[in-house]
Image 1: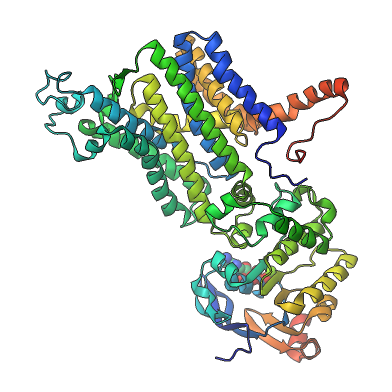
Image 2: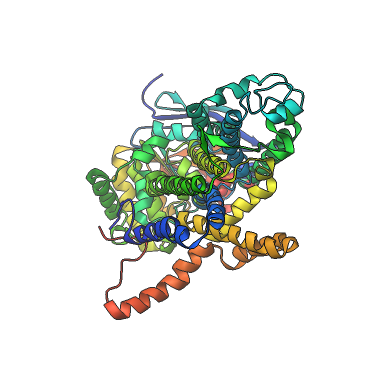
Length: 374
Length: 246
Ligand SMILES: Nc1ncnc2c1ncn2[C@@H]1O[C@H](COP(=O)(O)OP(=O)(O)O)[C@@H](O)[C@H]1O
Ligand SMILES: [Mg+2]
C-alpha cells in the first residue's frame, strides 16, 4: 500500500530483460559491425529516456534535443581531434599541431576555447556541463516567463536550426558541414579497432543503465509525481507552494545531461560528430523514438530507439527514399492508434494476456502496476 | 498599523483591457473570521481571490497579509506566507492517487532537491490518513483521483488545502455540484476548521452562507455593495434590488 519502493517487481523484471538483451543477447548474436550499429542506436536511447521524463512525465515537449546530443558529442570529438592532431601527424599542414579543418580554413592558431579540450577530465565534464548550461539558459528564459506547450516546442526547434547554421557557418572552428572527423585514439588507445568498438559498446550499455537508474529514481521520487501533477494541473501545483519553473528547468537540464552523454558515446563509437546529428530532423526523430517506445516509460524509450533505428537502417538499405515516408507514417500511427507506444501496447494488450495464461497455471495474480506489495 | 486584521485589501483594482473586473475594492478580514463573498455571476468574486493569491496581477491597490505585501510576491511565496486557495472547478491531479494528491500538498520538500530527497515517513503517512478521514476519503487512498465523483474531487481539493494548514484559506464555491447531505457535511467541516484560521468563501447557497458566515461582503460590478452580518446584508435594500433585478 502506498509504496515508495525504488522499483516494483515488474520493473525489476523489465530492467533485467533489457540488461540481458544489451549485455548478453546482442553481443552473442550480432557480428562486430551490427553490434557497433546497435551501440549507435543505443546512444539515441539516452535522449529518448530524457524525453520520457521531460515530455512523458512533465509534458514538456522539446524538439531540440539534438542540440544537447550534439553538444555532448562535439565536446568528446574536440578532445579526440586534438589528440589526433599531433605535430607529427599534421606535419604536412601549414600550421602543424592544429586540427586539419582549421588549417584548411587558414587558421594559424588553436582558438582559445579549444585549449581546455586537451584535458580528458575537462572534456568529460564538458560533455555533461555544456549541454546542461545551454538547457539551463533556455529553461530559465522560457520557464520563468511561463512559455510552455507548443511555443516551447517551436522555440527549441528554432534553437536546433540556429545551432546547425552556426556549426556549418563557422567551419574554421567546428569543421563545418563535415563535422569533426578522422578521430583515432583515446589516450593512445585506438578506438577504430573491432575490440575497441566492443569495449565501447559495453561502456555505452553500462552508462545507459546508470542513466536509467537515475531516471527511475527521479520518476519514483516526489519530484516525479510533481512532474505528472504539473502536466495535469500546473496551477494547482503552483498554489500548493511549488515554484513550477524550477522543476521544469531541472528536468529539462537532466534530459540535456542524458543527451550529452549519448552524444559523447556516439562520437566514440562512430568516430565522428557532425551537424547532421544536431538539427531539426534528428531532433524530431528522437521524439519519435520516445513516442514509439511509449513516452511514459523509460524502458519503452530504449526499445523505441532500438526499433525505429533498426527499421531505419533496414529500410534505408533497401528503399532509401521510403524511409522518411515510413517514419512519418509510423509517427501518425503511434499518435492516433497507440498513444502510449510500445510500452502501452505491452501493458494494455500483451501483459494482461500473459498474466491470464500464467494465472491459470499458478492461480496467483501478481500485484497490479502502481500498487506493488510492500 | 494595528494587528486587528490578518488581511487588509485596499483600493484593489484590476483592469482587463479597460474593463474593471475589480474596482477600488477594500475589505478587512480578522483572525479566525469566516468571510463570505456573495454576488451575481461576473461580479468579480473569483477575480478577487485570483488577485490575493497572485494568479492575476493587480493594476492598483494593495493586499497586506500579516504585515506582508502580497502583490509583490510570487504565487508559491504567497502560499508559504500562509495563504491557501481552492479553485472554482475542482483541481486535483487525476493521474495520481488520492494519497499522492495529498502527499504533494504536504508542506515539506518544496524545492527541487527537497522533492528529490523527500521520504514518506510515518509522520507524513499519519497526517495524510488523518486528513483523508476528515474528508471521508480514507477508504480510497489508493484510487486514482480521476475515478472520484465530482463531489469527492471537491473534498479532495479541500483536503489538499487542509494538509497545507494555511492561516488564510480561500474557497471558491466549495459546495457547487454537491448533494444536500454533502453540503451539510462541508458546513460542519468548515465550522470545525474555521476555529483556528481565517477563511474567505465564495458561495451562492444562502442557507449554506447563513450556516458559516461571520460577515458577508456583497460584490457587484467589482465594488462592495454591502457588508456586515448575514441579517444586515439580507435586509439591505441595495442588495435586494440587485438580486431581484437578476
Ligand atoms: N483574465 C481575464 N481577462 C478578461 N476578463 C476577465 C478575466 N478574468 C475575469 N474576467 C472578467 O471579469 C468579470 C468577473 O469575473 P469573475 O471574477 O470570474 O466573476 P464571478 O464573480 O462570477 O466569480 C467577468 O466579466 C469576467 O468575464
Ligand atoms: Mg467565480
